[in-house]
Length: 208
Image (cartoon, rainbow, N blue to C red; front, side, top):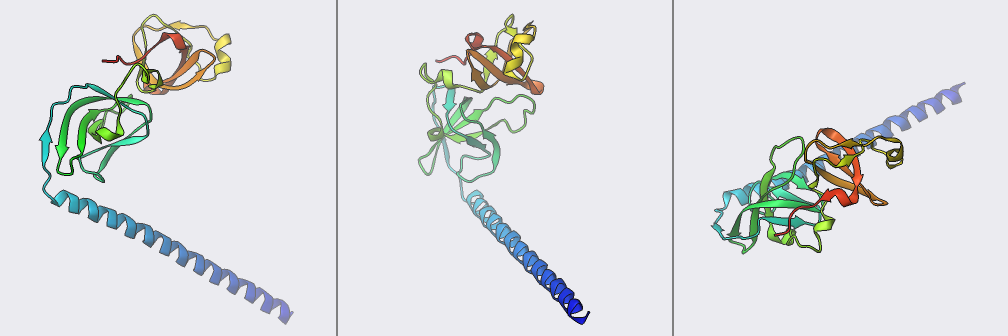
């Protein structure tokens, strides 16, 4: 009986020590993350305290293509506050352009948003964009338009198109192109709705 008691005590002590060790490691991990975040904030504050010189330049392109995931920033400074992510294959509207002390060319742009038009304008380096051309316009996912009068299928699953009655669109609808399949395209539209249309009915942004 005494052996059993000692065995139970040993198990309990092992569990307590193990839990204590795990808790300690967890606290160390949290502290490490906080130290990293603190260093990043210090760097951003240091940047903001430095004088920022922006020379406004003439920029003729009104739209630019962002082929990879990116971000719009609050200021034309690398590492400044992120307003919003930019999804891959997005066309942005260019409002202004500046050259900074670091000889970087920054664009003040607006990105397509569907439901929450908050922080939809900000800065991105021109290097993160490319010209919108006839060669890459068909790669665009945000925003693509379905014109008034187009037959749309208000279903999510591709397999349900054949059993769904089409509805004629009553206005020009825009959305993010999320999928193509067998000549069909699915758009994610404002309000969280998904529609299928024939790919030939898609209207892409105009190339200047």
